[in-house]
Structure formats: structure tokens, C-alpha cells
Image 1 (tube, rainbow, N blue to C red):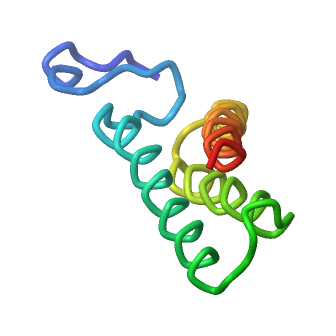
Image 2: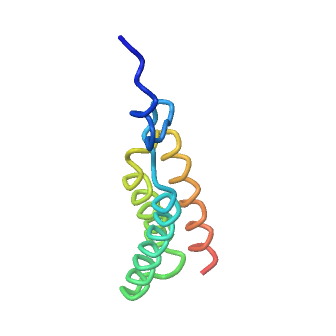
Length: 98
């Protein structure tokens, strides 16, 4: 097998076998997850659940973590889990504070 010519490699991102993920998507997806979690929190509040309800405290971070985990499919599994957990813990802390 011959090595690829340099002119064919120009313009391609060499990622070491891992899928490349646009930085904008990596940064905006947690913000989207946070907005969805706030929407879930407000809809559960409008439904009349008290702020100490387990459903209200645990559903919000689960929604945010699920959005991040599923939205980062080309990213390696370990990184997806780590970012989903960071978003879930952040949203959980905010849910406990409100």
C-alpha cells in the first residue's frame, strides 16, 4: 500500500482515528441541555410539584444528561459520559438551590 500523497491530505483534519467534533457543537450542546432542563423544571413547577419532589430534582438532570450524551454521538463514549455527568451535576445543583 502506498502512502497518500501530501496534496491529498491538505484540508483534512487528522484526528488520530477519532471522529472530529465541531467546537461550536461541543460548546452549544450543554447550553441547549441546560435550556431544556430549565423548561422541564418550569413545567413540573407549573404542574404543582413542590421543589423538594424527587421527580422534580432528578428528572431535570436526567433530561440534560440525556441530551448531551445523545447529542455527542461522534465523540468517544468516555468523553460523552464525562460531559453528560458534568452537566447533570451542574443542573442538579441548580435544581437543589431553587
